[in-house]
Length: 175
Image (cartoon, rainbow, N blue to C red; front, side, top):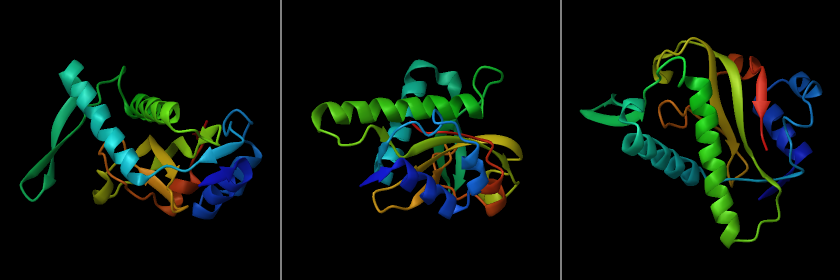
């Protein structure tokens, strides 16, 4: 599915990001004219490959996290100041764009950007979201059904944001 810049912004507003946020948005923050949507399974597969890349090349940047039921998952290990949520979000975003560039090399694309964004917001402590608190970064994207989805790069999960979190977004970049 292809979205115009205005369509993409309206989907984000409908998802709960205040419209006033986009009145202040410079054209460089929502930079493309036509945004291609992205399959949710592509986001998950890209995250798996991104974490594996760290495990293979910089094992200190990953850790095993208990996800319940006797299972663990390899996730990023934030090491300040060089690798924190902001850096991880942009690193994963770049990894997604690399994967989409490879896809575009073999499949013609009508779009000049993808409906994927890095956002900065204020997290509200919740058990289901790792009790994150304070300023945080995350990936938002529009999937092939047209739904706005949130993806927590620190956990590798599609974790929804609360209305307060969506309302607190202070930075957004989608190219």
